[in-house]
Image (tube, rainbow, N blue to C red):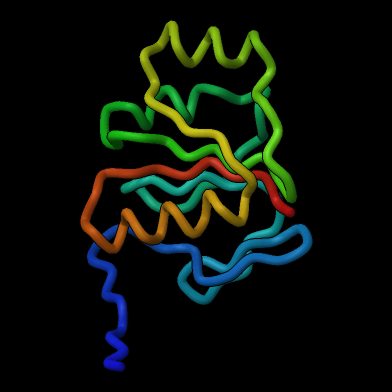
Length: 117
């Protein structure tokens, strides 16, 4: 079997994650974060939807990681994202990070808003 290294061009991938942190480009970031074509930024969580709304212009989908387990978004959050026409997928944070990285490696336009595990 041949193993090929994944190359990422431009946007930063998630290198690793653990209890309360993510490692992005070799740097540890504690707490919730958002990754877009503009880079990594802290995210205040589900009460802070503006970064997700802003990402819709540069991403075909925003992956929302809900922590250790998948959990549904509150109905008011869903309503606000849908009203703003934000394309999103909700999953556990580990799955969101993996899916984001896979699509990023395919040069897809993606963003990630993720709560720590």
